[in-house]
Image (tube, rainbow, N blue to C red; front, side, top):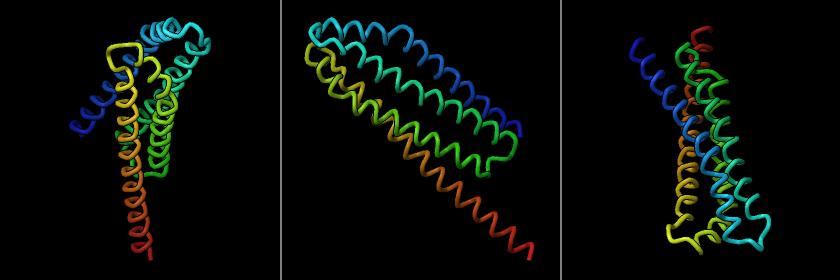
Length: 163
């Protein structure tokens, strides 16, 4: 029991740290990136707003996924992880990861325009985020399917025993 609670507490700490890191990026880095992009292309007025839309737009599903992960860890601690709510949370995490990846795919042309005028390859950062989000989506989908199958097996066993 202690080992499980210790590992879920560790994962909670990782979730909180990830949330703080992304919040710091949203507060300090994103406005500078948007201003930088606007200065690179002064004739293209919406450039700054497009950066804000992609970056802040991806932060919303990211935080929702963190919230879902936090709740999933609570269910694990309460020994109710094998429930339809857990399956629903994994489904939500999968959709959040797909949304983040989609936003960055749509933002790739934007990153390409910025990377044309900058030495460090900024577009690679977008590709890394896309790839990481897709990996998380696939992992959540696999866990969702396995958990659903386990719930179905438990349900079948309970019906067999009840008869």
